[in-house]
Image 1 (cartoon, rainbow, N blue to C red):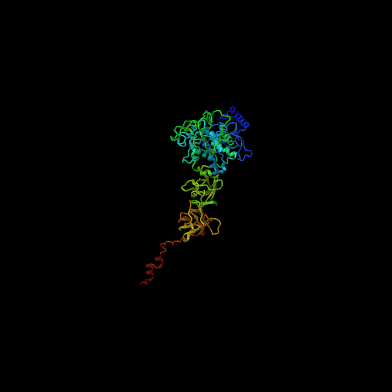
Image 2: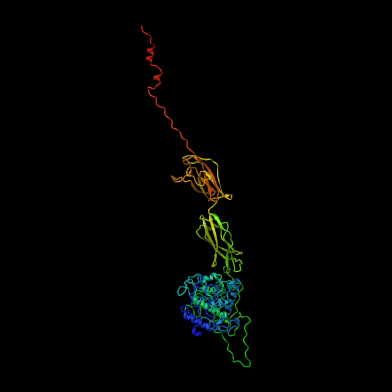
Length: 629
């Protein structure tokens, strides 16, 4: 049946009929099928089967969607379901054998991640399924004693021809290509993803994607990202698709995953079965793709060509009277046995176990972030908020996580800014798991806005804070000076008016103050006549707005108020935003009126006193003359 089915799917050739035949054949042999959806669908999404179109997940692909091997597991299971999985070396089908160092790396990664992220429920068989499909378990276990492949395992250049187009991100440091990225190592990470998720799981001080211990640990953490629970079918599908966004890839990995769960066994390094067909349909059977443009470390032992079949020593015909003793399994299944037929130069050596606990990025441990700052965030224009938005990063058990990068971002229509005028800031959580944003200062815009806090490199829900900016306030307004303000109608007040605003005893700069001319201290509106504020020609505005200066003062200079044309007593009412107010009395007196004087007539010649007060000399002489003789 395996020969008839071809035991593999090729990308671009997985029609519904082919997939249906594959599933039917697998089901008939009681081998793993394409893992149908769970009946309760606890994950919330329908599982993706062979005939479905996979929806790419939101997170990036670890491999850059580079080619992979599509060889399916054999139709016969390695052993009956439920049987013991730690089978002796070279026992069961060859395809079920996993090289010793590779198997050790998978199990070590599972143990490490289950201790740091138990909610993920990572099974090592999932890593084995991916490792089988990506690199044939590191080229059949072609690794040195430290777990590093004898030569780099490289995928083809991701130049957009047939697969993704990813420009170089590592300067060729990992993949030797300074133009485009290539998938690297047994788990086929692209360099940009390795830069984030790379691990030093074997304790040699390096994060090497070509080391099976480092790569397996990184792959496990990557699969567990975004709070996935791999015991749920939907999360399991999403995790695999995040590695390589292909339905064929998902089905092939899950098929090997199920195959390995039914049982497997350890084989010596270098004797694993290599895959035979790659998804780009180029017929290459040696995955690592193109020859790397650089030479391996001269201290690294030269690679050996492993045989696909274990070497069986020649045996003489058995003596029926003296049957051979059955081979006993090794006491430690993680240690490969000594094979006398293997030359000393190629004899597998015991892998060196990691000497340090693998490093897990702090962000991966975070299950949620929660606000710590309580109560409203408010301040007035131009001032610093009294409280800084603060969050705590917690793991699945509620314990704080230190060393997590938290990004604070100002969102909304506002001119509020962090220190230095920035709208974003990144802060690292301390030993208490808490991070507070830098000082947040309001601008001149009134209203509310939002501050969001997120975990860098994660897609966890953000913690949000609402911040509100109000106008500056003054609870007290007092007049400076006591000079009487008076003017006559039609003139201007020549005295200066000054008032000081304070709030809670301190000076209140930048406070809006409204001035209003009223007829009494109990008036409910401005006067319709009398004094007014000097403005444009012809205007008689009886209200005006002022802003206190840096010393909390407002000043109306001489001539800022005109008396108007109606005498009387008025008040200048000054009211600050916040409630402080003061009244300044204004007296308008009528201008004095003067009656015009009547001018005296100019005297004429006939009205002269000389003509009327004394007689002329002739008359006098005539009247006093005596009679003549």
